Image (cartoon, rainbow, N blue to C red; front, side, top):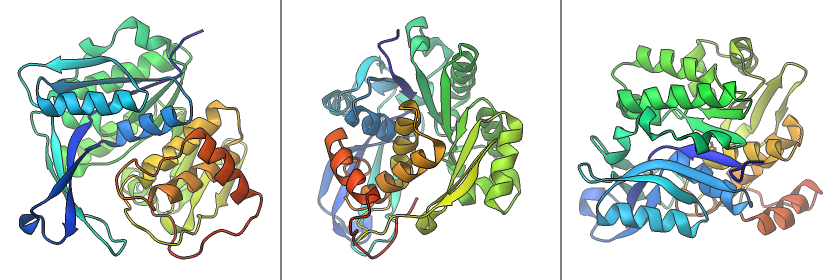
Length: 328
């Protein structure tokens, strides 16, 4: 039996979050954190007690050391994070919003160490993981990172491992929209569980209705699809079942970034624990709703004990806060 429950890969950046609201150009104080959709999911799964291995590259610089230190504090196995002496660790600036609106994010990642991920980064021990989680971000970074994404997903699926995929579209990183659509859909066809947002699904498939979007991916080889519907929750479809699961009301939306990553944490963790797909969506909606109530990309992701006490209370029908709904 593998000691690795979950393998995840991608780019973790340093993130400088504004201490006050307003135009980033006028902000004088920032707080240093980390950012990255792929590592957000890895951290969330680690907090729930899974053994998670992280595959990536960082620069031989202070930001790279900060990234690795932070991930290791969250329990991730970073033995397969390469230190790149020639290319820097990527970083981003993130604005502060106090009204629940989406923050402004400026990226400084072109030519970063993580963009030089390649199939050479894949070592045999990694393929022993029970599950692989992938997103559409690494294949957008570079041709070599795209090759690695295809090879890793193909080899894991061929080895009988389960594979999840969140498109996580970043159009500005792709050479063209058509290349993005083609490659993302090819990657989705390698996954068992596909987790797009509604707007992503519409762009990628050309269909408007969630049921049709889900059917598109089921026809491509997926076993199940969950489509995030923002404040309305999520729609799921398998070959045997389908349905809508309502979103979770929250009292105050603090930071919308990372809600979709929280959704992925809920889906993957529940499915690996052999819950039904409908039950997994309920957990996913709840973790997504929790994520938007904390400032930061992954700060609101729960521990196992928090999930047991709070989520089980919520599904038992105890009163929940009212207000804005989870945004994914």
